[in-house]
Length: 217
Image (cartoon, rainbow, N blue to C red; front, top):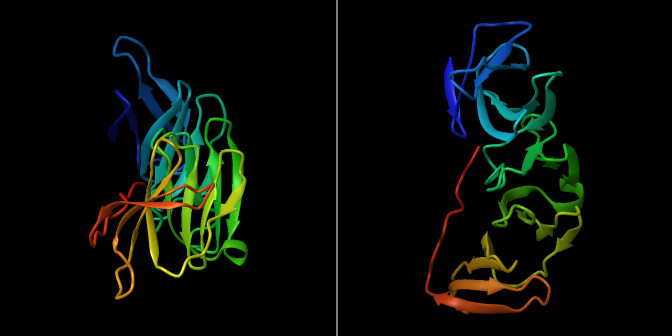
């Protein structure tokens, strides 16, 4: 089976059941680079983390980092329920530590290959969705009980609770958050910009809007 990612082609035998490998063709005039694969199945190469590391996702959502010179590193399970699973710059990933387990999530630093933060439902509530900042170094999570931000050091910050119903959907370059309010009889619906540090909000676009965070796998 052939695939294409980050301007290079790759191929593998999806019927292989053991000692499987993936060939990455970086130059048509050179020999392909062989990467060790997990046990047989169908895979998608999501991105090249570096010249010799690939981010791989199998058809069940299980995520791996694979290498040409050692066994794959299993990361966890990507969830179609969370939006999105990988940061725009490809450096960070949000996964479940067990398949189909919405009670516990982990944030991976893919460059350094380490878990930045573990998020349990017992501490933060069940996660509904997550959004990444443009540079991928801040995350906001709307949970059943609250909205939290996790920074690149792994520190979690609870956003203040409000009486109005807020739905956060985006970061701006300065670190502020965009959200919209669910309209009711006694509020002013619209899109707002929140300063997470001060807690101050500014209305940027009045009206009843419902932006949808993009899905990604």
